[in-house]
Image 1 (tube, helix red, strand yellow):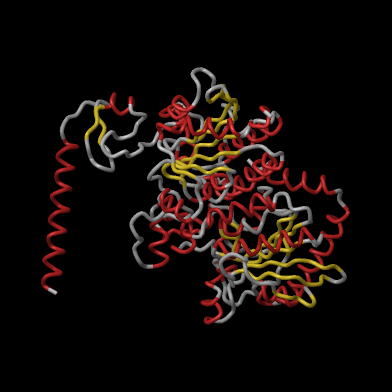
Image 2 (cartoon, each protein chain N blue to C red):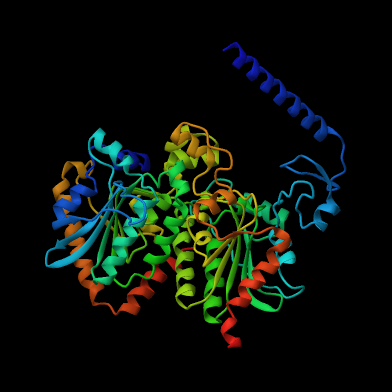
Amino acid sequence: MKTAWDKVLIARSILRPTSKFFIEQIFDGFIELKGDRNFADDSAIIGGIAWLGEMAVTVIGEEKGVDVPEKVARNFGCPHPEGYRKALRLMEQAEKFNRPIVCFVDTQGAYCGIGAEERGQGHAIAANLQRMMTLKVPVISIVIGEGGSGGALALAVADKVTMLENAIYSILSPEGFSSILWKDSSRAKEAAEVMKITANDLMELGIIDDIIKEPAGGAQNGPELVAERIKSYIQKNFAELMKEDLSLLLDNRYNKFRRIK
Amino acid sequence: MSEMFQDRAKKVSRAKTVDSAVISKSDKPIPDNMWEKCPSCTHIIYTDDLSDNLSVCPTCGYHFRLSAMDRMKITLDLDTFSEMNADVVGSDPLNFPGYKDKIEKLREKTKLKDAIVTGIGDITGIKAAFGFMDSNFLMGSMGAAVGEKLSLAFEYATENRLPVVIFTVSGGARMQEGIVSLMQMAKVSGAVARHCDAGLLYITVLTDPTTGGVTASFAMQGDIIISEPGALIGFAGKRVIEQTIKQSLPDGFQTAEFLMQKGFIDAIIERKNMRKTLHGILHLHQGRKHL
């Protein structure tokens, strides 16, 4: 039986497959589309269009990078406002062309820096939360590694919010949480146990819809298998969500979050 | 080099003098609540003078924080406020050690159920739904109670075609309620979206401080975003940013003035002009009636 902290370590493992891997495995003919049309392209978020079997979809994912140079280039998967604005641009484009949207969540959190504040990190996340709630196409968000705070939620206002078995999703990192509440960041392990950040805990709390199983020890021990499971999950759920009447789809999305108290 | 050290030594000794002056002042047996010290210019202000001046320092213009009820009183027409959903409370989803006790004590101390008061009231005869956050209650943090009251206020306003005005003051999402607090950001955003799509007006007034998950949700979703002068407004806390980038932050970073310069705030309005400004905006949005 894994502790919450064990899962934190698995979720953060440098061996864990990232968004780019899953995008390559699950979709055909991915065409990356860059830039927020306002300031820059943020490589902490990858976005584009692709085929999911016979269906054209928009895909967006937070990307930590694989080796050190790539991690640095992608800011370790911590997006700036322009990343969230690119994501929103691509989601609105998906709505225009009636394409369903898949989001992969994997970030410690939105970046905390001078430029991020100057360019409105709070505003960028707020805009995504508001707009995603009314997108007229189905959205599925899958937390594949770390779902850190508002930086994760900004890609996770969706019809289905699903986690990989060893992923975590939390209000803040365990380190930040223990630092704020206990004035001691070294109690992160203890914080992880009380925060309810694992897929099982969040399923019990009614925060997420489903859990996708991983091989023993974690997704790195069978990344292709995990990709296959994600693919069939997305296909099955899009097939159901596409059948739904639009106003029912939007009501369900609204109520999914509305009832959380 | 030696000059630099001398300069540094001077600064340190000056800082010490200031510190000891401050300590000796606060050590004097000043009767409770008669005097208030301005945190900005350190002038001592007679409490009655301060409240006559809407809790703004007469010397430097520093805007003191206001409780939700004081804010309501100086904003709305006399006796027009009717509170809604006063009994809505949150829960303790993490069974977080000490949280329930802390909440109970705060309820006793503040006479508030949680960190926001919502309701309906008038500004110079124009009716709107209002939310007044209160920093005395766990730094105005948003847990399920704040999220629920805001959502109910927006839903009521949408149904009754009313504008919404929210005064924010918050440290962000409430840590003690964990992921449930994070989800309130999405929940309230949904209620804002429906109000917005119904063509209705939403004004946010950001007051000191407005940060974290509140900035990253309803505070930044207003059609019109106003702030009080000097308010601290940001997403990440200063300490977190300094730890991340390993350098100290420039003066004036994350102030209302900084945010306005960067394009995220429509106007900075002094407290004495807030009622008039809000009325002006609300009135203009009723403009079609006069055609």
